[in-house]
Picture 1 (cartoon, rainbow, N blue to C red):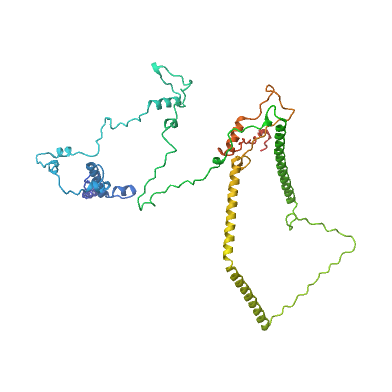
Picture 2 (cartoon, rainbow, N blue to C red; picture 1 turned 180 degrees about the vertical axis):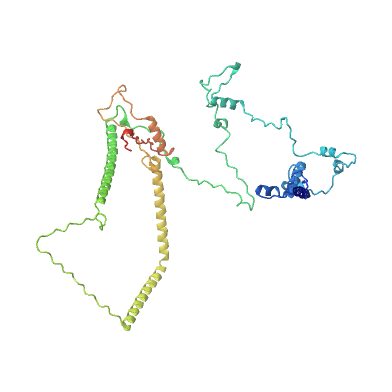
Length: 451
């Protein structure tokens, strides 16, 4: 009988546990569970009814309004009604006892759209509308077959059927709409708002070198460069070309001399004796096999330092004060003498300033006169503007008729140098491709490896 009593007692104890009622929102509750061993059991026994009620309230607001009240602005929530609306009473729903609760629920309209099982026009995302020209261009890029008139497949290898556009550019389409000579409209800024708007930086009005240069685009060639030149003009051009070549040779010799000095300095740097300054050498002392030279160290006697007496210090101080007073008196006398010469000093300063101004104007005029001849041979920025090459032939190479004449020079190079000398383009040097060192290949043999 004992086991039966225990079973009854256990069943009675289980029935005596009161289970918590279900939550108002419909979620099951397991708060009456006795075991709370582990995190899972603890999560089940947490009371989340206040959180569920708050979430359900937010959902109801979203169904009625379309969004929560917290996200609404003050203008959407509050309205100052000063007149009143007569249509409010008609728009409000009337209370009826005969109307069923289900009818009331169905009559409410929610701001959230309903869920439909079948797709509608609004639910299907609209495809991006691509123009016919863009579609044909994408097909050309992908090299896909395209159908032309009469459903004929077009050949992508013919002109205009590739991925490139043959249409006019955007610059041609918008040509004529911008006039660079129109005056800019000045915007009027109200008083007090000058610092709120960023001011436009005014471009300084400076003269450009190309406005001063008077070099023609195509220079007139020298008479000596003709295929049948006069003797005097031919000799003059040969002498000028000789001067240019001699100047280049002197420059090359000067650079060679500088390189030689640098190489000698580097070679001397390797033979520097420790403890000696750069460029100084140490002579070797000859060793005599005869009698050793006796060296006597000369002892310099130290002068005993005697302390001055009080009378000597007072005398030195008095002499120093007298010397300082005489210097101040001479400076004051000189200053008083210069007061009467103030007018002459002023006129001298004005003359010096006028001379400096005239020298500055002369330098500007000289620079302007130099600029009129172009920028040939001058450094402009990083590089130097190249000069024109003197094309002249010696008397043996001259051709006396046009049949045996050989063309020399390059018209493209001449026009390019002319544009650089007239400050139309910046001076440049040709960028040569750099050669990379070739990789050496080594073949490793497996039979040479001793492991």
